[in-house]
Image (tube, rainbow, N blue to C red; front, top):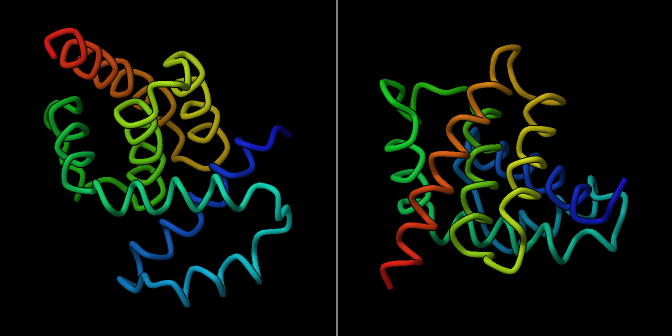
Length: 140
């Protein structure tokens, strides 16, 4: 498994934890990495994803809300919601990563960890988010 794929999985697990416990700080993050991140080389990118999603949560959730017609972020399962958050963060704030890679990785996380119908839903939502982000980039 590739390093960034592992980092995305680690980030997903921690973001799920934050979603449930509402507790995120440097200590909880370090404890999480110490106990659950088997591949220490994946930690820096996982930490970047976690902090990026957490810092830009409102922007990311707005992108997801706009792209998921008739479905609010709050109604999604914590796992599904955080898979979309990671991919939306990368689409919006990591332009150096090709969008096809981000969408593919998001769909793979959805297949491994999401609810049964979620991969197809995630594909549609992430494609709409990419369309919005690329339109914003062209306008600026």
